[in-house]
Image (cartoon, rainbow, N blue to C red; front, side):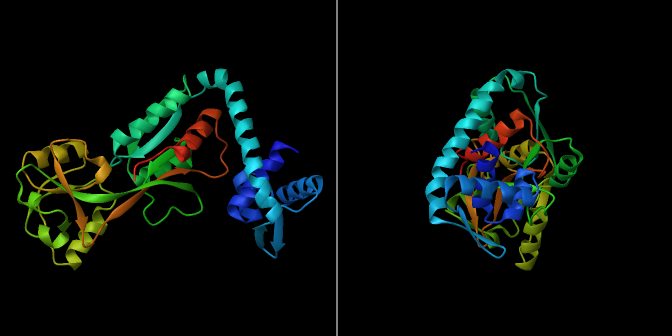
Length: 292
């Protein structure tokens, strides 16, 4: 039993498609299929049932998967220990984040990652979603954390990390504080602070237009810190993702009718080899206890 065979089996069980599994493992589909068949012959029973292009895990395969996952996890842990000295001298993990990401909660993940993998350097840079996509394609970033909106296509590998609601933020003493939740119609005519960097801004504006909700923007900025400061200074209310609010003095209420949510995902380029440090970063992000 070889580690590559185990990796192919786990990928096939995850995707239920040999072609997709081969892409994920950076091998040809015939090579993956041959390796799995060789392992099945060694084990004496099929791990998968093949029905044309459809692949199903057999009962024997289901009983073997937990053991194979444990073997893979132990092998990766051993490899990580062996690579520890090398990690100290690796190029820093290059992470791109969209500028509207809630940095307080993301920093908690970074702190845990650096605690688990001492000596690994991480560089974080902010940009818009479109800029992050371009930098990933050009190889200037290893991974990006962003809202994929309507999808990024087959050119990117996307792993969802968490979802968060949009809330309405306002200063203490504001009339909106009397409400437990806020409808979009409640905000018509209210002074408004416009977050120009919000990747969902155009969608929210279109909904406002469809519902005849008039928003009077008294201040506009691409800076998240300035937006919150202006709200606290009683310039107006603002829409924000709930995990992006950093000023504790601000009050917030969930936005309902309609409810607006976004998904934060880890994005990389499939088929591009990861350094040990980047592999550890991706694995840590997938296993982290994210909010929401």
